[in-house]
Image 1 (cartoon, one colour):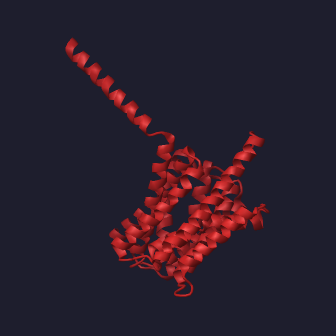
Image 2 (cartoon, rainbow, N blue to C red; image 1 turned 180 degrees about the vertical axis):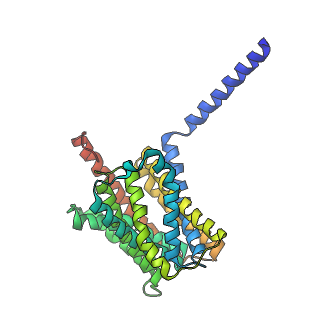
Length: 319
């Protein structure tokens, strides 16, 4: 009995040592990198699933079911915290964001259905650039020559990706419009964080998408079978995990570390596009995407630096 007890003690000590070594290996910085990579993988997987789903169903119907399933995914959290926790404090802005978010999602889903995965991903990198321009216009934000240069560089990259001299295409234009609308939604979400919690913002964004997507979906409705419903559910899961891993990454590391990793999404997109849709991106796409991401990364770094300077000046301020 004493021998067995001693063996168990040694075994427990060995296991605890291994667990401690494992936890030391996964530092917050390394965890953030892994979470950022996973976020990119799930985002690309969602785009790939949308392409598959829209082969048999209209993008508007796919967008509607994706929204429904996102709300179902959040239902246990809502029931646990109670519906009172979801009461918005800024109903007007929540409603306006829902309209903008609906336009963004419909543009993105329709654009993804008729655009190569790699090209769509590259064009989505323009969101931080659009967000900066909108901040200048509506928030009266002062931007220096370096950020203006970054924005011009980013748009030059977008032109290279679009190749307007060869083939502009309706899909890429929709992706850009969706990116513009989504950047507007991001700015509104940033303002909403001053009055509402994350769960409330996320819930009402999803709930607000239902009216527009349902009305448009009824015009092109085709009843899905169980296999197609499961694909819609996977799209919702992938989208939810994309945002969850991104938020977890942002909690653990500076944006300056994470933004360059966003470029990996292009590699996943090229890989999935080639495997499932036999898409081979042109050489210019890599250059254009590099310019767009470089500009977006610089803008993100400048934003992070500005926040840090404000916090150092006034540590009590809530950003």
